[in-house]
Image 1 (tube, rainbow, N blue to C red):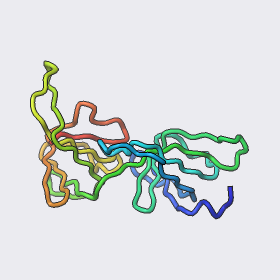
Image 2: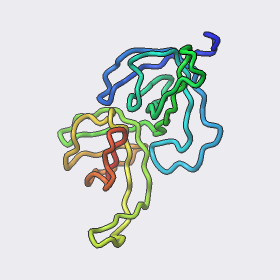
Image 3: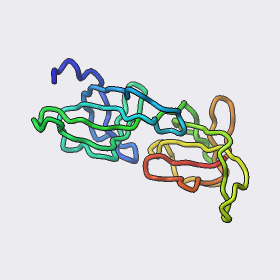
Length: 174
């Protein structure tokens, strides 16, 4: 690959947000993207980089206001010249995570409205907001009284969703 094609500077982050390094990359968005239903973009983004031993699935790449999660990697031509990363872009709007004590920190947020809340009997009990944020943006473990502020609207967090924390995205109900 020609060096001029790798024109995006990305930071490599671990799950807690600690920077592990920086790389030059060629970011290629997905050709087709379905309807947005959460923080994760439905199509896969291809990111081409030079080989680095530190790169592995589960790490985050951040740059130009975008956040990606590495899902897989491969040397397609087995030449050891460039590595193809399959990434999921986390698409959210800028919001604020307000802790119960008043501390605030910026987060990327995706809010889904009228999400069914299923009770223990397996029936829909009511409809709630579903609030997704990247795990690395969460300032500390959730506690009652925390809330998300987005576009002037407050979303008090009532608990983790049933599939609430997969290590990449944390999902709350409100």
